[in-house]
Length: 100
Image 1 (cartoon, rainbow, N blue to C red):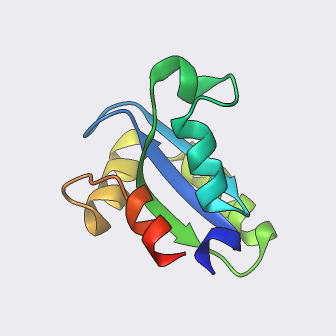
Image 2: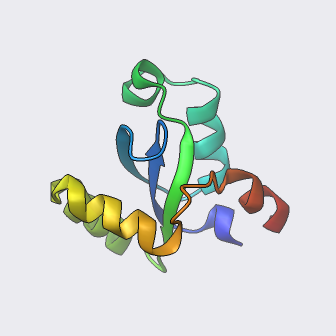
């Protein structure tokens, strides 16, 4: 089940807009929290709510290392990562909920 597996994810405010990189063990719940502004912080302040990229991991430790690495990347590298799998910058959240 993808929603209960360690995942690294990227949210965007719009196509090529403001980005947020995060990690979670419950993707559907965490993205719902971002979309509904449940927790104060960066995504609420800047309206960063569209799930545009995700990567599943077998272990939380590897997901955390990947998240930290991606956060250090240049913006252009993050855009390329997103556009390799999601060139239209579609919000992937609804498709996750269907799979669950």
